[in-house]
Image (cartoon, rainbow over all chains, first blue to last red; front, side):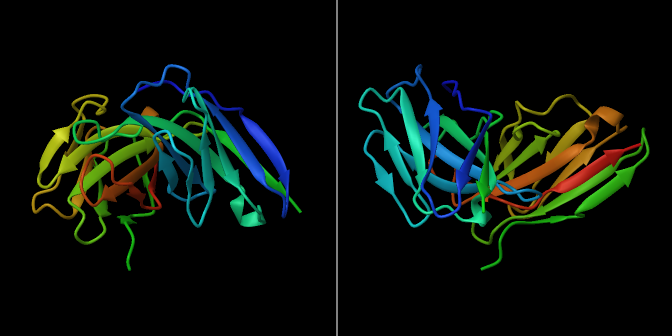
Length: 112
Length: 114
């Protein structure tokens, strides 16, 4: 799986949009971008994934650049409960490569 | 519905002892994963089951670690002759099948080897 690079930490004011960047310059054509987050003392939680089109669900939006070398996770109206470590993971889609390879992620702190 | 559960939530053992960690996946999920997380690091893959069989055990660090899933549901991670370096949070996850389906994680078991 391709390697990802994320800033170690970020702050965001409560109620504002949190934009978390991820660089994956060596991504290959069959690799998806996944985002998970881990709130303190809990297991990781799936947020969203995408291949090349922008994706949105009830939790977040995922913006992938046209060349697919980077992406941004957007939490549109951050709350204190969004304070967590966010992991960007690149993963081959489909059977035969089931494991998730986590980096050290971005520690997002929402400021009241 | 019920999520992934893990027991115990905390386990303290002495160096050299044997431990078993249990994972109850979400009902109907055929895929089950074990990860290990050390302080300040992201989770590290250990083993993946599809049904009863271990489809990928490439992450097990050595032969002291073993996992089973005899009936395709509950799984047990077994660690023999524990060492202080085994201290970590052990996470279990399950998914509907392997491949593209998202993994749902349990709260983890914090293992401390003294």
